[in-house]
Image 1: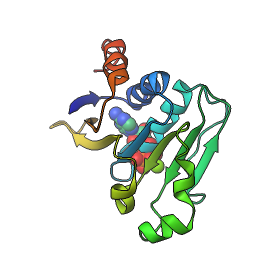
Image 2 (image 1 turned 180 degrees about the vertical axis):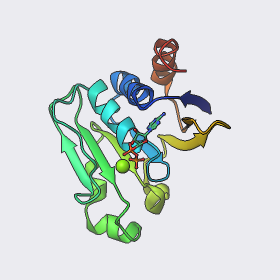
Image 3 (image 1 turned 45 degrees about the vertical axis):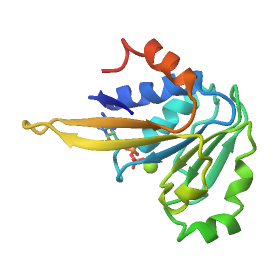
Length: 161
Ligand SMILES: Nc1ncnc2c1ncn2[C@@H]1O[C@H](COP(=O)(O)OP(=O)(O)O)[C@@H](O)[C@H]1O
Ligand SMILES: [Mg+2]
C-alpha cells in the first residue's frame, strides 16, 4: 500500500496526471472518497496524462463517459446513482472493460466484487490541520502485478508531496 499527501488541488491533479502518463492498457482503478474529496480533479489529471483532448467532466448523470482522443481509450465512470450490481449489469457497464481501455470507476462500492481483480484501489481522504488548512491523503492499494506503478511513482517523487 502506498500513501501520499497533497496540499493543493493542483497537486491532486498532478498526481492523477502522472498515473495517466504511465497507465498501461486495460488498467482499472476503483476510486473512492467522499463528495469533495478530489475524485473528479484526480480523474481530470489522469485524462490529461493520457493525452485526452476533451474536457473531462463528472459523469454522474451519464454514468460512463468514453474518450478516444488520448494515448489509450479512457472510460470515466461514476456509479453514484446506480442502486446495485444488477443495475450496473443492465446498464452494460461491463462492456466498457474491453481489455484496452483505461477504466476509472468513481463510487465503485456497489460492484467492487465484479471489477477486474487486477486493479488499483485509490481512496482520497479529506484531512484538516489543527489550523484548519485542508489537505488530502491518497491511499493506493495494489491488486496484482503493477510494475509500471513504481516507475510512475519514482518519476513523480519530486512532484508529489
Ligand atoms: N489537496 C486537494 N486535493 C484535491 N482537491 C482539493 C484539495 N484541497 C482543496 N480541494 C478542493 O476540493 C474539491 C474537490 O472537488 P472534486 O474533485 O469535484 O471532488 P469529488 O469529485 O471527489 O466530489 C475542489 O473544490 C478542490 O478545489
Ligand atoms: Mg466528482
